[in-house]
Amino acid sequence: MHDFFPGLAGVPAARSKISFVDGQKGILEYRGICIEELAEHSTFPETTYLLLYNRLPSQKELDAFNSDLSHHRRIKYRITDLIKCLPEYGHPMDALQATVAALGMFYPQPNVQDAEANYWAAVRLIAKLPTIVATYARLRHGNEQIQPRDDLTHAENFFYMLFGTVPDPSLARILDVSLILHAEHTMNASTFSGLVTASTLSDAYSVISSAIGTLKGSLHGGANEQAIKMLEEIESVDRVQSYIEQKLAAKKRIMGFGHRIYKVKDTRAMILQRHAKQVCEHTGQSHLFEIAQEVERVMDQLISHKGVSANLDLYSGLVYRAMGIAPDCFTPVFAIARVAGWLAHCFEQFQDNRLFRPDQIYEGERARPYLPMSVRHSQAQL
Ligand SMILES: CC(C)(COP(=O)(O)OP(=O)(O)OC[C@H]1O[C@@H](n2cnc3c(N)ncnc32)[C@H](O)[C@@H]1OP(=O)(O)O)[C@@H](O)C(=O)NCCC(=O)NCCS
Picture 1 (cartoon, rainbow, N blue to C red):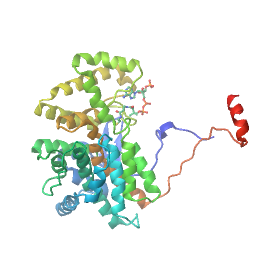
Picture 2: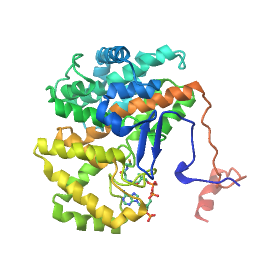
Picture 3: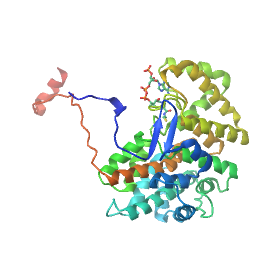
Picture 4: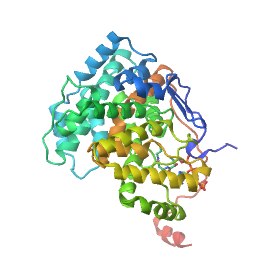
């Protein structure tokens, strides 16, 4: 008799040296460095380097990595044409997934375990994901694509490709911090999905495209989009209590709360909460932030005994919305960051690969006869 753990809760799927979470104490570390320090001092490209290579880069290494990233931001015109062919009413995560899968066709990789080829696959994916997201976001609304600029930082350039203006330094820094906070998070659903694809010795583009499909769901990356919709639906602080009580009574999930691992408030949520306050005040949009604060207070009162607290998605949506990013682009922004962690896990898997092929507990019938068509109908009615 097999033990069965729905959702594989608590079942290790890999040995990993990439990140560590203690959900009881609210600790998150990337390669042993706590997330608070990275959010305070690092940049997204530097954090990505740390995740991929297990060490902080020297200035020379960081300059070379930044230069490689900034020189691979452009996408081929045929990729832009492909994006133009996608329906404007489609979800940007689907556009991203389809485009990343197509991207791999332009850069075939005969040996998926070749380190040099994987470096360039990583550079292309990290550099081009923001361009793909911004291109679809603009084209679907009838706007011209904006070509990337290699003199801007990763975060500045993404903002620029979306809006055509360079963000002020404090806004760019908040976007960069948000990318750092989203870059990696142990064995989450999308990372696992990418790992399964990697274990078949598929290439990095297919790995990232699988992971994007998994990130899209509302129980995972899609929660940030749903959380902001909820805050907008609530409309005012005085409606929060009754709204939450009604949802909980109807056994509905409150988006932006709860986590499989964290049983205390997510450290990343605390960091982003401070930035959300700052950016909402800066852009004169404190209203939704106040609603979020009240939702958190009411949830603490009603459901914290179940170990359900605010997660990152409650505040990331507020930050992106205040920056003018459309809600259905929130999860793609998550993907732009998480690609770093997905790639780190993919390459770790390649180093010591074994095909994922789990077991199941079969609960269906066995040894049934193949019935001729003439008798099936009457059998079905029995
Ligand atoms: C993330 C999530 C799927 C984790 O779920 P999980 O580890 O499987 O936890 P469970 O579904 O077993 O939940 C445990 C209990 O907390 C409750 N709970 C968990 N998250 C909740 C939420 N967001 N709102 C209301 N209740 C919640 C469950 O109803 C359950 O209550 P019960 O024991 O009375 O049945 C879940 O918290 C969720 O759906 N959150 C909302 C989506 C979200 O924000 N996702 C982003 C995660 S970073």
